[in-house]
Amino acid sequence: MLFRNLSLWAICLVCASAPAMAQSMSGVTIGSDRAALNQLGIKPTSTQAMGPHTSVKFHLPGGNELSATFLRSTGKIVYLETDWGGEPGGAFSDFEELKYGHTSLADIRRHFGHNGMMFDARQGVSMLPDGGVALFIPTKYREVM
Image (tube, rainbow, N blue to C red):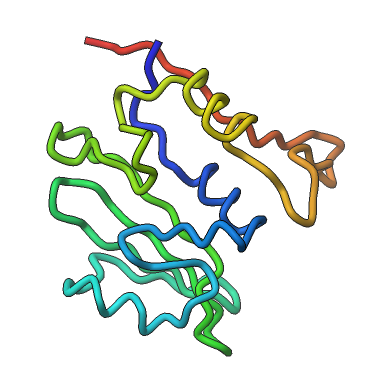
């Protein structure tokens, strides 16, 4: 079983909860100033205001997309996500040992010692006001031809 079109947002959360790792995505790190996005050398393909935050998305060479969210009042990047565009040339990830379309959940568990997700200030399960439950779980997908 392979991960199929699964973003590395979950792994990114590991970086946010463990700043000593200093992992970057396309050379940008969580906690850096939004000006760090300029080093990508490309303009965002979309920009969206969300409350006190702004989210920007960049189409990267190889077909992947990088999303970054920053707090407008400080310019501090608080979230990063890389999505695989499905193209073989974009199968690389920002984690040398992991490759889109080839990395299994077992590989992620071996590399990180867990599913690739950790929460700093909250659990992986949230109670919703209507009594429902929101779960944040990385999922394995079978390759679909």
